[in-house]
Image 1 (tube, rainbow, N blue to C red):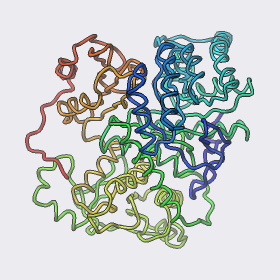
Image 2: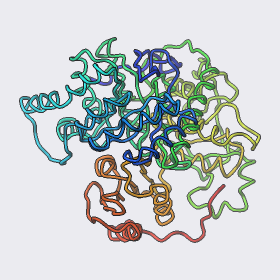
Image 3: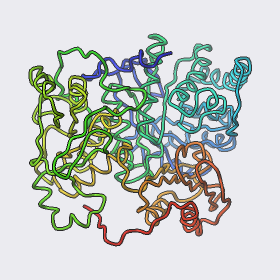
Image 4: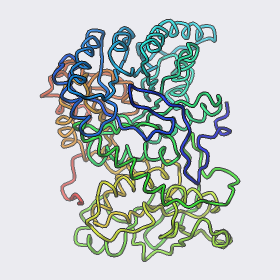
Length: 598
């Protein structure tokens, strides 16, 4: 399979929703022309019936359409009978999903009581050992036969009980078999899911959806694109719906930005039938963000203008990140393009508003004023304007013109496909600048993350300008946070924090804030905060350090994927984490002069 020959969407330059078959989860239809469905997951212990029922009802009241809860073991899964009965007795018909890791017997029990089962192919029939082993074709087939024996009973039960299923792979929690043949890669994630999907199809079972979740939006986007491309290649009857999510996105602005980059980018290409925004916050906080993200895309899509040109080739590699090559360009003290990290540009008005504290902003500084730069703003549909730019002997800074009736992501892709390589590109979050500070900040955040973040993940862009948020400090912070989340410019600590669920062994929200307070100044250090071993060493992926629940009120600390300290009392664990970071020479003292922008 040559990924470069595969397509993942109908048109890179215009919105068209991917067509999928309908999958029924209770009374809710996913795909098949239905609206994008909103999901979340409760945090209560599955053994606590009253707490679970109350949380499910709260999510349903917040317009959550599908609710997931964990079922760690068969004993936990047995209580789903009582939880489901309590929810239905309250007059709520929201479909319930059991989240299964490691325990096929728990899945078989759960399928008796809930409308959908989520399984992770990386651990449904495998225990992670991180073994390095070369599999012969015969040995690999033996592994597949073993999986078939483990998985087939669940498929048969889902058929007889009319249950749906999600085959959901997670970056970092792939089986040793997949890891040794494909690596911890988007391709490995896709192949892991397809192994289980083929078994389901052999039983003529088709009531399932796929997901390819990762905490890194760039990895997540690539994995979903590759999955959809493979499904197209396999044939029209592989048109299963897609569930989108950035796992362990974190909290606050960072969590919302990461989710908007990953989910928003794919929705912009017509991919996605159901979504979950995973925040390390109360689950009810996820619902308005998810709804706003779907509505944000709908508003942008309605403004889209059709294009008439035919591109010779894609302006980016959809399946493997490569930054668009440009020439270096210098304006006085500002250099951009080439291998330089994307610059953050602002307006003269915003610069003036921040002038009294610019020397104290540290890594948050605006780097140039747009009115003082020589920028060529063009309509990417204007063939003559593009031709004139390409005739220039020296590189020029180019942007899409404001006021056009065209979607930002598709406009910049069009520009990148028509513009010759030497010319750097200035990205904008919107083509309709906002002058009022009374606008909705969350809406502005989602727009900037979806548009700028998605293009940066495609390798397009040498400078960024946030003009949808009028508040000077907030627009500047938003620009830097989007670049950080997209992996283009690291200026602060990066956190991978899973949302709470019934498996969580400590208070994730409080702990995340304590760790942020202690380590938030460590530029470039990546810290994973995981509630349990399920989201432990595998799903921490490329974190430098990990803080993982090992037992109730006991913490295990990791360096990379290796556990180095065990069963630390929770009240000591943050201090011990700081000591561990110091021992590995990743610690610096917090600066005393830098101030926070707002």
